[in-house]
Amino acid sequence: MPTKPTILFVGGGSGGHIYPNVAVLERLEERGVSVNAHFVVSTRAVDATVLETGDLRGTALPALPLSLHPAKAWAFYQAYQKCVGLVAGLIAEHDAKVMVATGGFVSGPSVSAAKRSGLPVALVSLDAVPGKSNRWSARSAGQVFSAYKTGVLKQAEVVSVPLRRSVIGTSSPGDARKRLGLDPELPTLLVFGGSQGGGTINQAFIEIAGRNAAQSPFRGWQVLHLSGEQDREAVAQAYAARGIAAQVLAFCGEMGLAWSAASLCVCRSGAGSVAEGWANAVPSLYLPYPFHKDQHQRLNAAPVVQAGGGLLLQDHADVKRNADELLGPLRGIMHNTPRLDQMRRALVEHRPPDGADAIADWVQTRL
Image 1: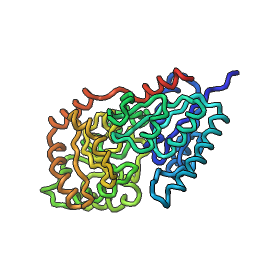
Image 2: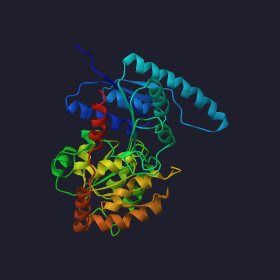
Image 3: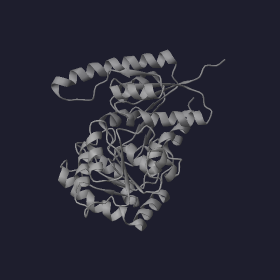
Image 4: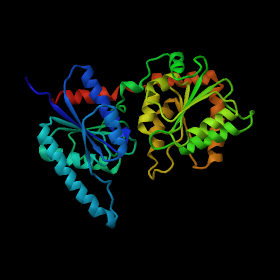
């Protein structure tokens, strides 16, 4: 019996780098393409959790982020060379047929090893501003995909961010709300911060909830707030103190349900969050993570904003300023049904094609 071909799926450091690879694997399986999938990830705890919960096999590389600081450059170089050797060993051990790399600091040495071994490589750049690792790896990849058109990766084929089926809602809004412990009839504001952390968003909503009734945007609405564990109790208490209908969860393992339940969203603009909201046609207010030097999350949100499906705000890392900036748009959209409907229609009309399918097409031709 012939053995199944092995694909090395490379990407780590956050779920946002691993889940796009999971989406590509899903599309291959849906087509009846039987493969051995081996995930190459970082040593961060979140990577181990993603692999474990998804029942995925993989190897953690002791890679380090690129640093030109004299005290760190040598350690980076040593780790890089070690990881090149480890990945070369994986390629030989599994007789790998193809590699898909979604960025992050594990991709650099992995793509280098693949090039030396003659292994076909597709690099998938997920953010509007390609990181240092992606810019370097693109030189060695045979195929480059990008979720954004960028002058940096001029050779890239533009596709949407690959999304797992589980984050694309299939339930009716009412059914999804009921399953999440919400009122099935009430419009729902979804609030979450994503893997980069939503502490400043959580604090802004605690402040908004505590303001007087005349300023409150929540009348006639309910809130599904994914706060993370650290702020869950404080956020829940803030809503309860003002009698605001809210379901506050540390996290939601069924994001497809959360998106199905949502009428409007407030979130970061990581590439995955933007793509999920667009795929589910949920109008969104974006507060980009404020501590990235290149501010790439602002650019991630730009296509949705230009299409008319979202608004881009600024996270000032200041509780009162953030609350002040959010209140106007929240009141202006939550209680303006025609505007909300118009934003939703714009998302449907301009929705990009499925990036996971395009990448699966490329992979399948090389197996």
